[in-house]
Amino acid sequence: MVGSEIVSSLQTISSRVTNPVEGIVISVTQFNTGNALNVLPDEAVLRGTARLFSKDASTTLENMIRRIVENIAQAHGATTELRYEHLYPVLINSQKESELARKVAEEIVGTPEIDPEYLPSMASEDFSFMLNERPGCFMRLGSGFTDRETFPLHNSRYEFNDDVLPIGASYRARLVETLLKP
Image (cartoon, rainbow, N blue to C red):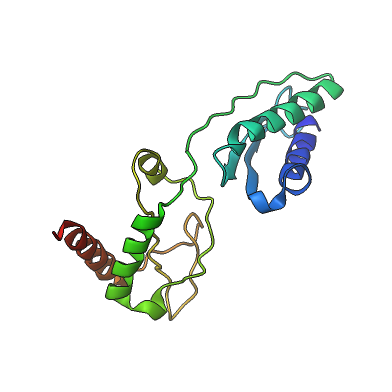
């Protein structure tokens, strides 16, 4: 019951404790308590991710999670061990590089194919480490199908659309050519 209460309470952080507009998502993706059907487990292991848009909010979020976990455990006479790892920094594109990336993409696929209203994403992305060191732009190449249902990345039914490979290769080649022009 302690683990269930922790999971439920963690969900209140983004909706009740912080400003929902700041964009915080907490996902408990694993909840393991043992394998026996007829034995009450001595412990539970919960794992998950926390994603956010603000570099400043990361430590605050960790403190909130820690407080919730410790207080619920204490209320039930349980003990906890929380390991919170800051695995990925927030990914923030720089303005100048984003404008260049958009210009080159428009040259390759045309302006109507560019989504100007693409919303920020909370993806955990290796490229965020690079953008923490140098200005740059992380862009997405749409890979949806027009003749059948398309599933998002990390969905068990995701299927890569090979037809977008020439578009992606052309885009990257043109981007390099543009950057190397005197």
